Length: 410
Image 1 (cartoon, rainbow, N blue to C red):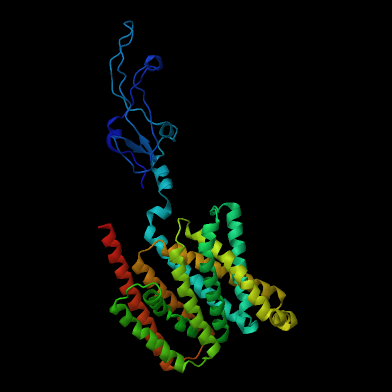
Image 2: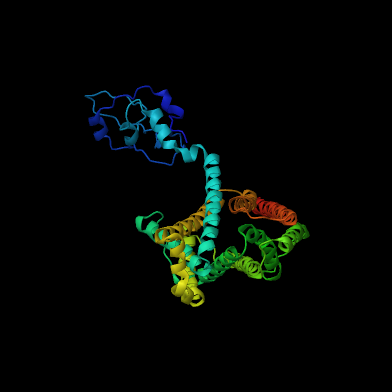
């Protein structure tokens, strides 16, 4: 959006002088200006420093015989342009453009990078906490609690402005938040029980559960090509599970429950589509999910935490590190989820799908490097086959969505 002088503005190097008295005596057409968005040049108007200029109408009246006034067409600049510093049009224009508008591709790339970076950091910190504090229910509560505090502070300063909530919207969001809470807790139970790479390999089955729910619950017809693309996913996860060195049933079943929970979250999310922006929606879901997660954490882990859980963790790493680790992992959890939502709003469905697959590859790869997890050859092959299947499924599904969208707009 460059600020520049367009069309007929350059045809008038100097604005003719008009007597103020004549303008006051005129009772006919009046000269006026109107501000319009940058780039909205219409009706013969001109654009300068982001403001619309309208040609002044002619003074049509005959003036007293004592003064001979010829009718002239003038172009009267708007007040904003007149008050701008002389000779500063270039610098002002550059200031108005801004980096976000000038380089949208770089900004989107930066969003993707930060999404992956925060996700990897979260997974690494999360697993390190479980190595000395194996209480996933309580840690899940901390994740959501830090996120809720972040949202409340953001609302307090107006970034973003809090969207109003009513009873009908609350009824729609509660099922989404309950599924989000269940999926989050079971994911953390799996992270605490097995290697991070294995949990993410199992979670690669999520598209399979989504397709099954769409076919058998929502009654949507799933093409055979999509089902065929999911076969490598199921095969790859099966091979990886059979040969995974850190395998245990708690981690496996918890990850599977997480897949089912997030599938139902997707189903309920479609019913809860509103005009509210994603940032506010996620904030409300986080608040409700926190309320849902607190009772199970108190029931399942409360007595152990009070008896020796907190004391053991503090004895191992110290109080300051324990508290700061919980704070940072909660902040990274909220930020990567929020940034993922905002990032995926900026891109097409196909880019969205590829981004999700690459994110899982990044997390699996970095977790193996950081923690030095030993994996068998079969596990590596199974993981690669599963990820390839997810990529194929995501590509086919994104193409179908794009064709459907084009069909609606045609």
